[in-house]
Length: 181
Image (cartoon, rainbow, N blue to C red):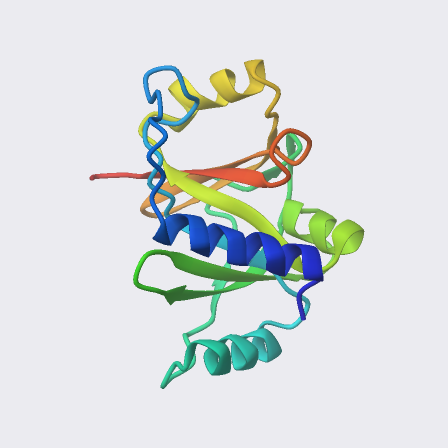
C-alpha cells in the first residue's frame, strides 16, 4: 500500500509526537505560529482498500466515512496558480494524538494529489498546521522562504494552502484556516 520510505516517515512522526522533545522551539521566528500538527495526509490509489488496511492496523470498529472534496464557488481550487476542477475522496481517522487523512485523487484534473501519486506513488503527502490569516500573512512568508503555493482552495468553513516543502522538508506543508473560530 505505502512505500517503505513513506511508512518509515509516518512511524517516525508518530514516535516523535508521542515523545515530546526538550529542544525549545522559537515560535516567534519560525514559519508557523505553533507546532501543534493537526494531521498527516497520505495519498493513496484506492481509498477503500487503504481504509481496510488502516482499520485493521488500528483496530477500528468501523471504517471512517469517505467524503468528496470539490472546489467551492467562493474559493475555487487553484493548482500551481491555475484554476482546476480537481476532486478527491477523503477519509479521516482520529488517533489519540493526531488525525490521519487518506486522499484518493479522482479523475484527470490537475492537482497536487494527482501529481504526487503519478510521480511518487502512494505515501505521506503533507503535514497540516492551523493558521490565521492564510493569504494575508503566510503565503508570502512561505514563498519568501522557498515554499511556493502548490495548491489552494476552500470550503464553507475555511480554506487550505499546500505549500511545497518537498525540496526543503521532504513533504508538503498544508496551512489550514478555519473561519469563525
